[in-house]
Length: 437
Image (cartoon, rainbow, N blue to C red):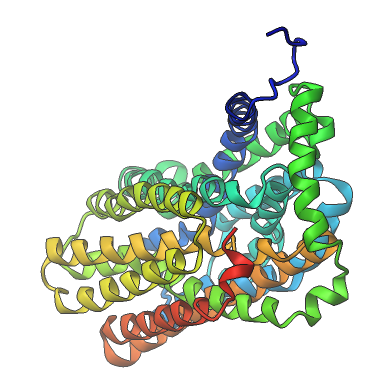
């Protein structure tokens, strides 16, 4: 059988092979950079949880003050999220993601100047403003390249950056804080902010040089490969329609998705900001030891995220793949309250909780992207993410307040577990025929 070079054969098997090779090329080209960007982003967002181990004493910050400062990041994030994503949709991901990364790197490094509660609040707010739009921008960007039946696995791979940031960030933060106090007159936590801001600046510049805004701009794809991707995305866009900004805000399913995401993010940041403190409370004292232990739950979660993401794509089932991990996360949090004086049993429970919580997040995004398109997708994804991330304000503040009130993290863990169960139940209200693609 003769063929034209560069054109896929017409048989089903050869077409499938051509499609698989095309998407493998796309993944290897765009995902590693986005992945590293998210590692840097999440590390700069939650490394304040490690800084607390020294900063709280140096600056006389109570748990309530710390929780409020950690969470106020998300107020700035909330205010600027939707406009940031709409701008990205209009001007392109390359320039806008680079702008986000460079500004958040600068602000994150400037945390070295924090000298009290007010400055702590101001800098955390500005960090949220700087970072607003990055994550929903990437979720939107992936819809330009991948159809729904491939986005579960790809989003899961991208979001394993959260887990990897924990694997890398914990030991790195612990080492810096333990080994560098007093160097050039700076505290260990100040060096941590400086060192961990550098990757964001470097990756921001790399984004300008490397990323393409659209499939049509990708010189590394052949015309046949571009046509394949454009056809796949075009079919889905016709089904979803090019919705408007107003339609996104008026769609009740968008608001349900925002509430689901809020419930899961409560668990994410409750653990993310307080995990080092919880581990320390079990009797572990050294900051490097605490850092090494925090890597364990995230390492296990990274594997689980990929495996369950693949399962959701293979079975084309979304709701139960989101709801079940949510319940597993709640069980892990509840179990952690029973083993607070035993490091290894507590770590086992916290690992279970982290696996459940982190697994819900990438698979959740298969729900709204299944029914939003065009401008409505840009606005709807940003709206869901900004409202959901308000839990990043509520969660650490409530855990800190409850800890000051009860002198224990147990009540905070009960609250987070209840929130995860609510999110799981709400997920099952989404129509299966709408989201199982």
